[in-house]
Amino acid sequence: MVDEPAPKRVERLGESITNSLSDIPELQAMDHSIDSFMNFWALHGVSLAVMRNDSLLYAKGYGKADSSTPMTPGTTMRLASVSKLLTAVGIMRLQEQGKLFLDTPVFGPYGVLGEYDSCIRDDNYYLMTVEHLLRHQGGFSTRGGDVMFNTLTFMRSHGLDEAPSADELVRRELGRRLAFVPGTWQDYSNFGYLLLSLIIEKVSGMPYDEFMQEEVFLPAGCHDFRIAGNYLEDRHPGESVYYMQPDSEPVTSYDGKRFNVEKCYGGNNVRSLMGAGAWTGSSVELARLVASIDGRPWVEDILEPSSVKQMTTWYDDDTFALGWVDCKPDGEWTRTGSFSGTSAIIKVYPDGECWIMVSNTSAWRGSRFTKNIAFLFKKLRGRFSASLPSRDLFLQAD
Image (cartoon, rainbow, N blue to C red; front, side):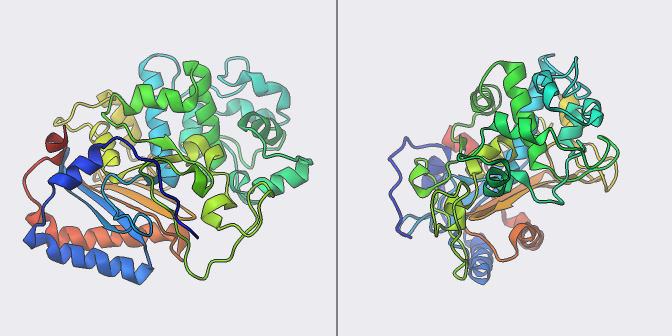
């Protein structure tokens, strides 16, 4: 694959932090550990941000963003399912504005998306609420394959020549029966978060990405979140190139129009994922966003304390949190994301530390790879937390 240069862009948060960051002798061993981790997993580049009590203590890029450009904390990358946390914040903002509630029906005469009722053949859809979608309890199942990652199969089964729009995909999918009654079980659903994206559009009266920029990212002081493109030529300014493992096989593009493409560049219709997995961003701006939704007093939150509590309350081991993939009773929160060419993880710990890592390379363990990053964080925290400097790189960048 030939790297294409990304267009020049205005310097953002990550670049200014990079320019102000000097080597810290006590943390050189941490850098060696990360380099070893990258070598073992054949990662081209990763970006790390470490925050404590809403202060950014450490931010660094390791390896390469492309064949010649060093990775920086400001390099943006696809965030995969970390996007779901961002979407959940958008839903909570709408609830605070009184425009919807978690128990608002999705379909039916009082539902947000009632215009789709004519497509429904299973009355259980009318029991579905916004909260069910946030917690992956809507009744959707991926046992027959995830429709969000099987576009070509969907096109062939429905006789389509083009990839379906979000509207067409929803209309056709709603004709299927649910796998379980909403609220009685859970099954991780990207399609459910596509519906949440459409709910945000319907309730706000704005395109999903514009609402997120105006009501979530800009209030949090974030400027570099963008919806991803599907191909290398769609790369945003400042965005990394993505890499597969050396033994990966080429595939047909998601819409059947290109052959022998790398899976990370055309294998999936990333843009169509919307709030389920389409966002790009940097590790540093993810840290800035977390500081704005964590209920800690040092950075002003964009959410009310009641919303933070709703998003992070632990119910039991079998119930997804709102947006977060897991929230423990002791206050540890986790959000992960992974698909071809990228992996991302956010870990918020009870002691106030938050560790974030994003990579531009597929790992052979796939979605399970984020567990290896979490284990790396555990080891690094044990060895190096006490050596992290007392400072706030956010203030240096402002």
